Length: 468
Image 1 (cartoon, rainbow, N blue to C red):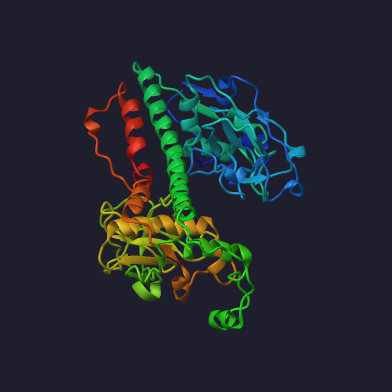
Image 2: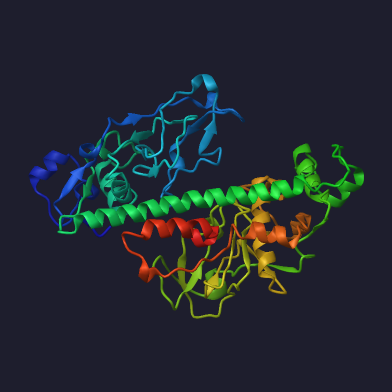
């Protein structure tokens, strides 16, 4: 926002040209560097706009997918394609091949205007919605340009170009006039290379996070599948005793899908345990209401004297945190310890979890977060349990157990219904390393020549938490 200038006065000529009395119509972007080029001047090919298919074309399963504008998110360099809310399966006959390939950049011109994403792989079975435009830039500048398109500086430009007032705003082709600044000093090639390397590193790490998350799921699936007791699954309707014990009729616990997935865990040859049997203590996070802790100060910038607030709504599906809020309060609040797990227990994002490591000090969560603390401080077990809880979320088991509307809630009294298989220690370690494996390196020895090679090495070895 520091580049936005608001004039103190306007001329009659300005008023006639704009035909607007809204103060926002007269805001401008001002910066010193005049070595700029518009997006339209940098493109190597004509932009390609997507098409709509209509919700009647949505299906539950398909080999063809429709990318919606919400797949392009501020916190991600890559589009979110592993959720049917963002990439919807569609009927094959409505699919149109947009020849989406690695290196393409997508920009949203509707709704979340100005959001962009980089395609890190060819997507022959995906098409883009009418609110998305495919862009292609020359190879030598595409990472540099994309870095600026992901910045607040770029989105501020788009924001000022698009008129306000409508429920859904449309940028049409106005974004083509957004400007990208280029360095104009003697070492300008080095600056472009430096920004390019950093951008490629972020993209590389996001892709590796997705890959390691898939590895965790596959390891869990294979361990369960390959170590089943001889007993075979057969669905049966609930008995009177089961209904009485559950004390619930409005539940999915008796549906075939839940019972089959639950059987796969309970039939594991080494057995299973509940969270409490594994010696975890279950509690709620800190109540942050004024009536409980008094007034607090909330900031987006880091302050060493403030608490780091991890909100469950800011936990990603990969077990990372996309935003940290810093909370100033004079009281001794309930802080988290190494090995603690924050589990989002409420709402549409329930089931997302993150592990607290020794790198985080003075960290708290709110009352909507469940805290799992291992009484014997078994860090490896905590890492494994966090990974398996995420697997249960992906399998919709958390949704089946939840109660209530607005996404539901997994109350503490239902935690004993969660089954954690007793994987051997070696298997737990193999799973855990993909989520938490710190790798040491000497940043002082990094330079433009060896950065990419060293970053590739570290990215391959690091766990998900370290890659974030």
